Length: 305
Ligand code: NAP
Image 1 (cartoon, helix red, strand yellow):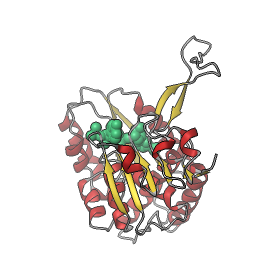
Image 2: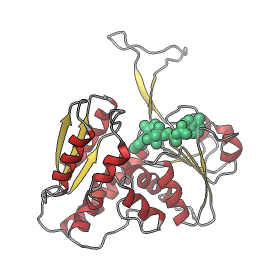
Image 3: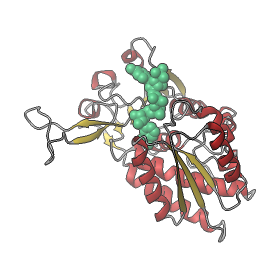
Image 4: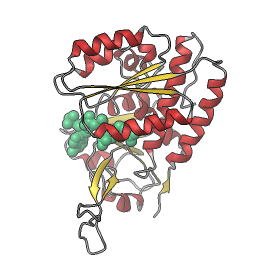
């Protein structure tokens, strides 16, 4: 393996240590996150568990409000209004995915920008475009923190961002522009992805398709930040799926990059798991402290400095 690993767990520990110090400067006011989970999509369960654990470790109160899938948009708007005006609430998380009849954009816009710890209110996304980020989407922030940990200069670097979601791809692209990098954003309609990625000094990928990026698509020495997460079957040495005691296939997490072929060519790579994921959770805690500081009219510190 040629590539050096970007250790997300170590980065997350460093971020939490810094946040701990910033928190002391806030005084004794307790911090509290309220997470709203609508319906029963089990893909939210892992995120909720990780968020809760991280909050407990940092002595941040974490309240999960589970609403039935029948909850209406107006029910949520009313609840968000109450939480926006509750001084004991530092931050509000709206777990995704929402049931399809609920409009993400409308609801995200109803969270007060200073309590929007996921950085998805249009006002917070707009602040990134203006080059004055305050609360930034946690995954985008985490991906950039992973990249910056390499120490490689970004000014003038050629970047490819695969995926253009509001949560990851678009904010990463604007954050990279703020660093004076040149960013190409690729998506489902991009023709000949490999031609684009082969020229990149840095490749971010956030799609959720294991094997989308392989070694032949990567420039030697490039940095690969793999944000994608997907559960795939584990296979044995004979290529057959491994089964658990209950006869069900054993699963493992995979990123978008074919790790073996990409790490043979790249200069740096984030593993999955253990790369961007733990840093994302640390960034949620960072954003919680940023939210508290904004609410107290205090200056905020960048997570990327
Ligand atoms: P998303 O909203 O589904 O976005 C996926 C993006 O990939 C879309 O922009 C889609 O384009 C694009 N895409 C689909 N097929 C493609 C292809 N063949 N080539 C190029 N682009 C393609 O998902 P997301 O919320 O951004 O999350 C993306 C991945 O990151 C998922 O695996 C998710 O689990 C993971 N994730 C990880 C973390 C973490 O902490 N590590 C946090 C959040 C998300 P179209 O919209 O045009 O189809």
